[in-house]
Structure formats: C-alpha cells, structure tokens
Image (cartoon, rainbow, N blue to C red; front, top):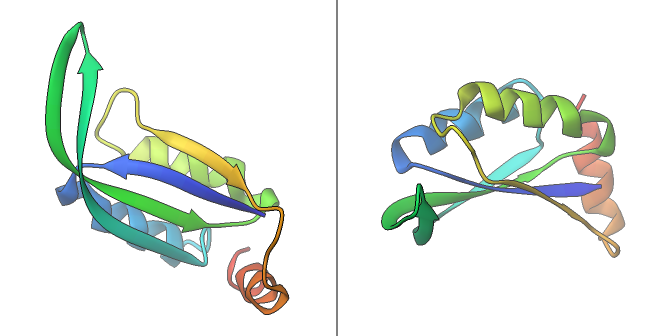
Amino acid sequence: MPTVYMTAPPDAADEIAETLVEERLAACVNRLSTTSTYRWEDEIHRDDEAVLLAKTTDDAYDELVDRVRTLHPYDVPCIERFDETDLLESFAEWRSECVE
C-alpha cells in the first residue's frame, strides 16, 4: 500500500486533501507546513508550501494521481509514491475499508 507525498501551495492544499478523502481516493491526508527551495526556469525560488501525505491503496493510486493533477495549480506538481514494507495490520485494514 502506498503513501503519496505531494507538495502544494497552502491555499490549494485543503481542497486537494478534502477532495481525495471525500472521493474515497485516500483514507487520510496529513498536511504539514514547509518552505521549499527549488529551481524553476533556471531561477532559484523559495515558497511557503504544504506537504500532503495521502494514505491510499494500490488500486486507487492511479486515479488519485489523475485527480491531483486536475486539482493542482502547478504545471509540474510534486507527486511521489512511497511503498510501505512494514505496516500495522489494523491500520492497513482501516485504510482499505476507507478507500474504494
């Protein structure tokens, strides 16, 4: 089962998180405030962003990515998949029940 790591502007993060949970593409989305320093169009930028960690399933992963790409305001959003190798069984069961 994957956790999906994403970054988003703070004003878009809540909508992305709530949509993923409402549409049952994620069981839970954690949001953390951060500052990102990155290169874009050969310039260094520094922006406030939100880190989103979405708990999903293998079956829902592709649809979740498609939905985030639709909602996300960036041309190239950060979307990374982390596959868990060790997971509390009761948490895995809960996540599977919440995601369709």
